[in-house]
Amino acid sequence: MNQIETDVLIIGAGPAGSVAASILQREGFRVLVVEKQQFPRFVIGESMLPISMNLLADAGLLEAVQQQNFMRKNGAVFLRGDEVCNFDFSSQFTDGWNFTYQVPRADFDKTLADTVAARGVEILYRHGVTTVKFEPTHAAATIEKPDGTKFEVKAKFIFDASGYGRVLPRLLDLETPSKFPQRAALFTHITGDIRPAGSEEGKIWVCLHPQGAWIWIIPFSNGKTSVGVVAGAEFFDQFPGELDAQLRAILTSDPNAAKRLAKMEFAMPAQRISGYACSVKQLFGERFVLVGNATEFLDPVFSSGVALALASSQRAAKILVRQLRGETVDWQTEYADHVMQGINTFRAYVAAWYDDKLPTIFFAANRNPDIMRQICSVLAGYVWDKSNPYVAQADRALGLLAKILKR
Ligand SMILES: Cc1cc2nc3c(=O)[nH]c(=O)nc-3n(C[C@H](O)[C@H](O)[C@H](O)COP(=O)(O)OP(=O)(O)OC[C@H]3O[C@@H](n4cnc5c(N)ncnc54)[C@H](O)[C@@H]3O)c2cc1C
Image (cartoon, rainbow, N blue to C red; front, top):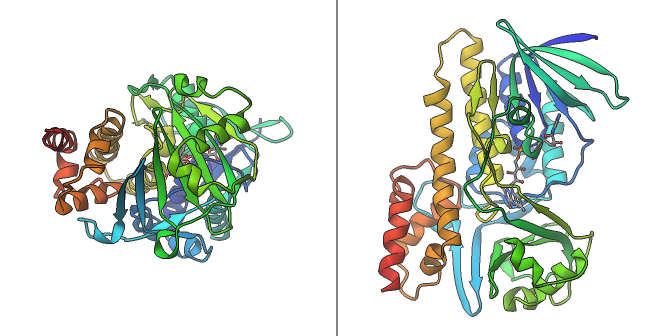
């Protein structure tokens, strides 16, 4: 079998893969990215968080994104019947970006990948990693080409940015079930969205469906809008029929979505995915690290996936640069603990969303503006700002607040 050598092999050219490639290549290391699909390719996960702007800028990728004319997103609106909770990122507690973008991921991911490729990173599309082995001096991966033949890549280190592919968790038996119940998402892109006017146009809408589900509405600048519903299996059983009919029935049975989507036409067939919540036993090992969705995926409700993918990948790439230069690094404290701080903050919010604490807080009649600013920063992705009590003690703070508001 033919063999090629590189410093770092990156599995996957999604946002996590491109950020790592950009940082490592900039620091002078040889990087090879292996991507199973041909870009542009569809992937779900289209609403970004403002912290992603910091992370893209740091990786030298923000300018390329800003040139794409994506829809500006300056907040999030939660709706339940007649009740509305409108967050604007300009009023958040943490000093951070007050807007970000809603992005069709086919275009966004291709923009990032093309930008790093233009700087000299080799990306092999339609190539998949099938096996890995770790030797004392190097790591080796078998790569399958589009014609089915194989070759070996010898690398000093492997970055697993394979997202839902979860290549190393599967090959190294690192997978462990998520503690969240398994939910499903049914979604499509539509035209005919009757959008709010002005600066409200680009905000994500999250509608709490009266029968126990939530709906996302994410407007793009290309005239299309991403719509989807997330719920447990028993919710979907109430809406029989093919996926398109099922999704249409769900969207039109929520009062807020029904009004906004009264003129919708589906721009692609509805898709359903389930069982996406997942976790791993460890985030790193000798000569490898897991980044982005290859680590843990919680839930889509707070649009945290891409932000966590960028943040974990940036962090890991910077630690690896130091390690490859001969410094001693501590992957546990510098990487795993840091990444888990972000994941665990979002975990507290996801749990509070589904056990009704957050809806209680969001739709309370007497919301405290200072507290809402602190929660807004979490919704903007600033989950490492421990000066924010709704980050530092997320679980406790949300629990106490919901209890007081319920009295
Ligand atoms: C229903 C739903 C809605 C979501 N909504 C949002 C949202 O609004 N906002 C948000 O931020 N996140 C959202 N997410 C999460 C988001 O999809 C992910 O967190 C994000 O895509 C992770 O990026 P990544 O770079 O880690 O992986 P990916 O974007 O999945 O990229 C991984 C790449 O690795 C490649 N790959 C896989 N296997 C192999 C292999 N064997 N060899 C080579 N390459 C391989 C894949 O082809 C893929 O291109 C949502 C998730 C779900 C399930």
